Amino acid sequence: MAILTLTINGEHVSGKDDESLLAIAQQHGIRIPTLCHLDGLSDVGACRLCLVEIEGSPKLFPACTTRPQEGMAVSTDTERLRRYRRIIIEFLASEGNHQCAVCVVNNHCELQNLSYETRLTHVSVPYLYPKKELDASHENFIIDRNRCILCTRCVRVCHEVEGAHTWDIAGRGIACEIISDLNQPWGTSESCTSCGKCVLVCPTGALIEKGEAVAEMEKKTDFLRYIVNARRKREWVNVDSDEE
Amino acid sequence: MKPKVATAWLGGCSGCHMSFLDMDERLIELADKMDLVYSPIADVKKFPENVDVTLVEGAIANTEHEEMAHIIRRNSRFVVSFGDCAVTGNVTAMRNGLTLDEVLERSYVQLADVTPQIPRDYPTIAELMKQARPLHELVRVDAFIHGCPPTADQIWFAVSQLLEGKLPALSNVYLRYG
Image (cartoon, chains in turn blue, red):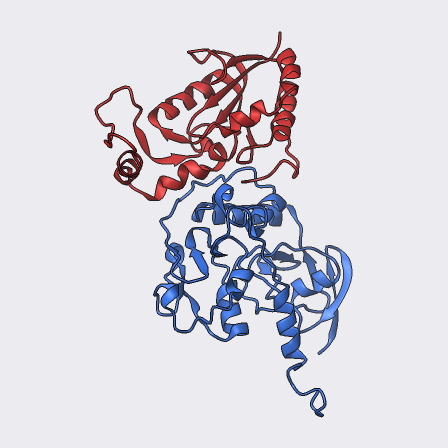
């Protein structure tokens, strides 16, 4: 592990060589918008909202999966990046059916908040109004694929934290969708432990608890930090033993 | 001469207009500053010419809305999408995943209290479009007021700006879906 020095938006910062640019920016109080990233889960660079510019390269890089290099000059908030981020939100809006007015997480939605942050006055591409399935077969929860943005947080939390791997992605391109087990109703899944972690980490109203009405559900993701911390510090090991 | 203002009610629930009325005593102030030349709350049959500002509630859901949207655009200096249905399609567009037959069957047969029948052979009834669309997909729109419905404060801010000839630069306070 080495400490590197780089600049973000002209400001000198330092970070470890095994950290992401996103982590280093966050440590220095520099906000980069994210959607698929969640502290405690692996990063996959799926949503592209955290794209940044790196001097000397014509390409854009997702900050969540890019490692720092000595002397790197990173820009996180240029006119081009702001425009691209807004277009990403427009595409997400047009490829789903997001009626905020009748959504359980209205006013507590990460997609909605990002539409404000990117100052999205209207969606300039035609809405696709795709036909998507809602599955309410689980005893406690509902998956409404109309509101899914395929961030895969549910897939990752189920695999990496709960260890059940109930969720996965099927299909390609516009036909991509989240499925449970072997593409069967969630209620019939044999691997699902009904822990509800997927529901809590979902940034939109795609995964919700039953019995919640419009704008009633606020998701808390803090629990993830406790679990991940406990795992890292091996808090389940007998405190009297010599193990670390 | 006072600015001429119109409001139109297309494929929406009238909630945005209810919110307009929620401006309460500020309506009296507005009445001094503008002439309301066309609106569901004014008895005017024909959309007038040379309107300064038109607020359009609702999505474009049938052929009458489509025709009206073009008339509004031709005759208005500023066209404003008024509320989420005009801006995104919102609730009006929730039927878009269904076929027209499914929509009509559900509305006029399955949910009917009396005389269930699909109204087909009435030339006076506008034809439903295959999908409800946001206003700006059909005509050029100059400003957007969000919300389902927009709050009275949002409407007051936007209309006040428009009456001064300014396009409302909506701050994040007023950028609010749902």
